[in-house]
Image 1 (cartoon, chains in turn orange, blue):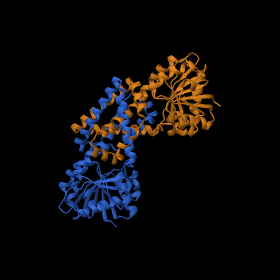
Image 2: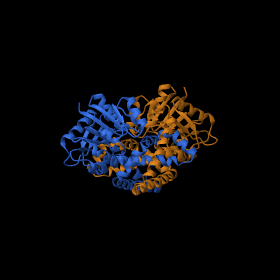
Image 3: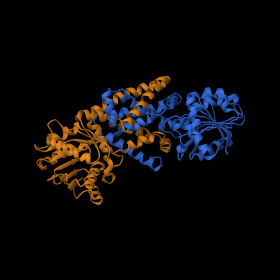
Image 4: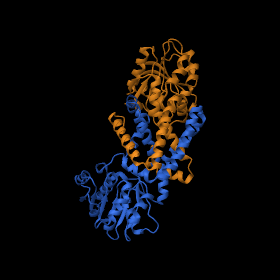
Amino acid sequence: MMFERVAFIGIGLIGSSMARVMKRDGLANTIVACARRKETLDACVKLGIADEVTSDYTASVKNADLVVIATPVGTNEEIAKIIAPHLKPGAIVTDVGSVKQAVINAVAPHLPQGVHFVPAHPLAGTEHSGPEAGFPELFQGRWCILTPEPGCDAAAVEKVKAFWLKAGSKIEIMQAEHHDKVLAITSHLPHLIAFTIVGTADDLAEDLKQEVIQYSASGFRDFTRIAASDPVMWRDIFMNNREAVLEILQRFTEDLTALQRAIRRGDGDSLQTLFARTRAIRRSVIDAKQA
Amino acid sequence: MMFERVAFIGIGLIGSSMARVMKRDGLANTIVACARRKETLDACVKLGIADEVTSDYTASVKNADLVVIATPVGTNEEIAKIIAPHLKPGAIVTDVGSVKQAVINAVAPHLPQGVHFVPAHPLAGTEHSGPEAGFPELFQGRWCILTPEPGCDAAAVEKVKAFWLKAGSKIEIMQAEHHDKVLAITSHLPHLIAFTIVGTADDLAEDLKQEVIQYSASGFRDFTRIAASDPVMWRDIFMNNREAVLEILQRFTEDLTALQRAIRRGDGDSLQTLFARTRAIRRSVIDAKQA
């Protein structure tokens, strides 16, 4: 038994997958699911992934030795304020947000002395949302990045790490700011671009749009999958990793402008040179066993 | 037996997959593979997908009742000029290029009276190239778009259509210019964007680049697969569908600029509204059984 009482605040794809891991491996004596919507709580009961459910944040964290904040990151400050006075001394608070510095800034100042905050980001997900979408293998073989602040309790970090190892993840410890920079490139920019191109297609005249959907397998389809990710979660990511996203976006648009110019001028050599380089990167991704 | 003698000019992923279908279903008495590189021809012999091989374009088409041009589209005019005087009267010439109007402009004027040109574009592929990469199921359940010009011999169109049906494709007949517009959106723009973002990542400092590869599963990975497609083939696509690509690219960059502005100004509502719309498009793609 790893934890006596675990509270999930927010229990969608990620939270419910974590709860499933805990149930599967017997890692928690009691799992409490806290969500605002009654349908979410009903689903948790039906799925058997929570022992208790409540829509009351303060009640949910009472006596919990682990609190998992698994809501869109924009809600985290409010949640931290509400739960802080009710946290058990020695409790561990963790999260699963896709941005880390903003979450630390939002949560850490509100937590009382003796409560340990261990921010985490499992690099796993699907385009589906809600507790029904979760499954315990979601984290298998995937990275989980922890970004504890200097001075964070080592035993608390170890405990969170132990959970993610049980979930099958590979662990990396990183500074929050660096995490946000890397993820802006590997995740946030790709999502932003996918949202954009699918939005561009959505603005087409209806006939043409239907054809684009019909022939989407030729490339567009892959973008629609990415652009189907949870709208509120992604709104909050962009609002909370603004600088890093805008910086890499600026580089991207410069590069796109250069390509646009090459196409307009009929400069095939520049295109071919770039395309040969990008093909080599694919090889690196395969070599890193990330393909 | 559908064809007596079929000549493939260029026999990479697409050509070799077509040859495999013909071998599997006994659709051709003799298959001739023509390629410039000796290794390609040796591979065809070794794979058993061609009965004869040659690097001589004119020899390859002699007595062929079907000639398949399956090289990057930038080579098509030169090939048409070379083979035209050697084509058998009544022969069908087809191609597999990802752009159609430019191919028609490059090929049709050179073909003699009595030779029938039936342009085709199978919407199928992988990021791999070369005859070894082909497989006969590549076209199964995928669209193949034919763009014959008005006045094209109906029997020739039916014959090409019959081959693609045997390959398992769904057929659509379309005007070449319209094809190019639709494909600019569904295929060419997504590829251009993927090439760009992977190129942007390739320009990062080495340490950061390694991390981007390590954590690529969070979104970037999907772009590397698209950006690993054949460099010469894609150079030629952009060079030969310039106007349609530039037009949709212009719309895309406008939309991206609007998103960039929303992020900079902290306008979360605009982001969320867009992301909800793009999620709906995914549903349409799934409903169209293209997911």
